[in-house]
Length: 341
Image (cartoon, rainbow, N blue to C red; front, side):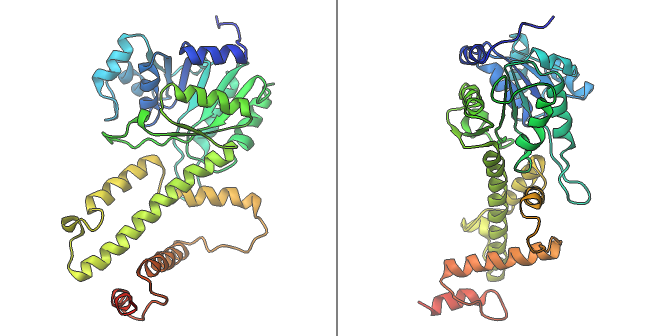
C-alpha cells in the first residue's frame, strides 16, 4: 500500500529533514553518483533502471562508474539508504523523482528525446499529488514546459499547485577526482517559484551552491551554452596546436596549451555526456518553432566547419591585434601581429 499523499508544506519539511524518499530514473554515470550522494547525507533513495542485469549488479554492490567505488555503494546498501529496481511502479512511493537518462543523436543528427519521453511518461503514470519531478537530462530549451508539463496535466496534475516540475542540468565531470557531485554548483529552473524553491531546497542538501534561474527554459539553455563553450574552447586549442606544430613547439612540453591527452579525455567525457553535435541539434530544434520564418541556415557539416573556422580565426586575430588575416600561411598572422605593434 502507498503512503497517504503529502502536502507541499509536508514535502518541504521532509526534504529539509532528509526524510523524503528520492527516486532517480537512470542509474548510469549521472544517476548513480547522484543517488549515492543523496543516500550519503541521509535520504532513502531508489534507483530505477530498465536493465535487469544492471540492477542486479548494483544491488550486489558492484559499481560500473569510477565515481562510485564498490565499497561506497556497498555502504549505502548496507545502511538501507539505497536500492536499485526495474519496478517503475515504485515511483509512486517517491517524494521526489529525478530523471537522468541519455539524449543521443539519431543517424540523421537530430536529437533523440525518446528516453526522456519514456521516463517522463512513467513518472506521470505513477504521479501522486505534492510530488517533485526534476529533469536533468540534456535536452532542447522548452522540454520541461512543452513536453513534461502536458503529460502531468493529462493525469489531472496542476503544475505549481500539487505537482512541482523543474529542470536542473546534470553537470557531472566523470572520473574527475577533484570535483565530485557535491563540489559542482547546480542550476535550477522551476515552472513556478514554488517549483524552483522546492528543487533548490532538495539540491542544497547535497551541493554547496545552487543557482536559481527564472525558468526551466533558461536552465535548459544554460546546459547547451556550457557544452558549446567547451566545444569552442577545444576547437580553439586545437587550432593553436596546429600553429604550434608548424613552429616546432610541443604544447604539452612547454605548457603553452592543453596536451593531446586533455583533448582525448575531454572528447571521451563529452561523448558520455552528449554527442559533440547535440548542442547545435538541440538548439536548432528549439529555434525551429521560435524562428520558423527566418532565412535557411546551412546545416551541413561543411557549413558548420566553415563558420567555426571563420570565428576561430576572427578570435585569434582579435587576440593578436591583427585587423585582417594575411593571405596564404595562417602562421603569417603571427608575424603580422608583431609588425603591427
